[in-house]
Length: 337
Image 1 (cartoon, rainbow, N blue to C red):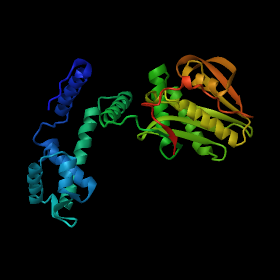
Image 2: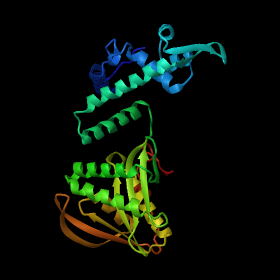
Image 3: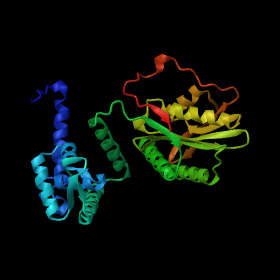
Image 4: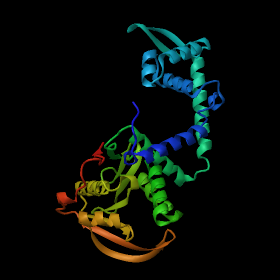
């Protein structure tokens, strides 16, 4: 049955997808008989990939999962067996079924295809700078999420830091503040220094880092570090643009305050700049008060630095009126792990 497409029903989106399909299939050589300069078509390469990553696979399962014509698959498998790429044996769970395994030769083919694919994509994205690659990565994740029918979006998970996270924090903050405010490499250097000191001096009883992820992508972070026996500092609060508007920043700050209370601190301080209005609203709502502000020239800009502080004695999480909450539909859940 052919669907009748009206303008309001998504005709523009359909044409945009078709245009992208034409562009991308041409760029990656899908239409070539010799995919990636190999003897295989794209479909054959995909079948080899599935076998390499799935282990012993029933031929019927392969046909169903890839939505392929059974007769076509049968001819393909016969060709693969003839060239020693796969081994075919009877499925003990199904007398009429067949189980497929890559041979050693087949695994060599699969590894070569993977190497060629990565090299091809590396060439494709080589003209892009770091900012453009970040945009591309986010866009591709969004496309996958939307077309896979994930609604609401995948939940945001909050966890403690682990190996490799500091590099991601430094990169995400440097890129974000450069793109949004035009800050220079001085800010990246500052973030790197803070992260390095945190790792060197980390005391888990009195310090903590919260990492927020969605589908494996870093979307937020914040640090609590020891300043003295009675005072802690909240540092490097950041929420990625794609995750804003769902209360993640508030959740990170709240977790920070609760940890500081539990660790026995009496005061929590932070330093920020007045242009970071969204963060300032979070601090004010949480109960922080502005103690001092002073102009300075940093990160290539003239800025107004501010020191905010919170008395932790008797602090309780502010109650927010229901009217200020966004509707639940379509909002990613924020949960600790």
